[in-house]
Image 1: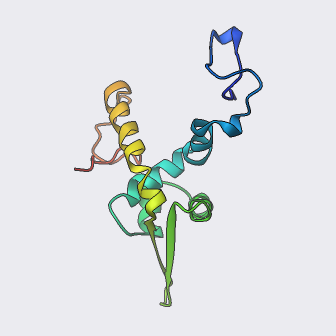
Image 2: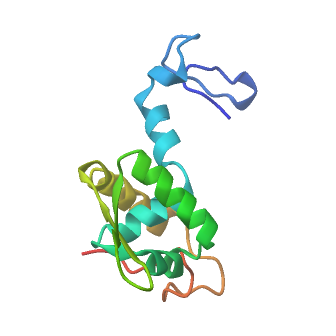
Amino acid sequence: MLYYGQLEAEEGMRTVARTGDSHESCPVARAARLLGDVWCLLVLRDLADGLRRFSELQASTGMSPRVLSRRLHEMEREGLLTRRQFAEAPPRVEYALTEKGRATLPLVDALRIYGERWLPLPAGHDGDGSDPGARPTRT
């Protein structure tokens, strides 16, 4: 993995940071560490439309319950979303974005626009939502 401040001569990569700068001081590296996971981005995408239940997030993203549970706990710990559990049988849990989570939505939209323009769908995918990563765009 490349960190901000490193020079990778064999890759021909350059950086504007001084050698020796810690990647901890780079806001891009800190944001990428928090948001750079594909599952995190898909949860953010799905919560952009409002409250969602665990089962809805699982169906939309295609994540296993274990992976989804971990991501949701991490995102809650980081302040990206809130979790609300209702005293019902069966248990009902809803998730919503916080202000910090909503602040990521322009990034998610930028990734969607980039993907639509530069990363064509694989053969056999028509973008009808059958692929968990293919979802109608928000208006």
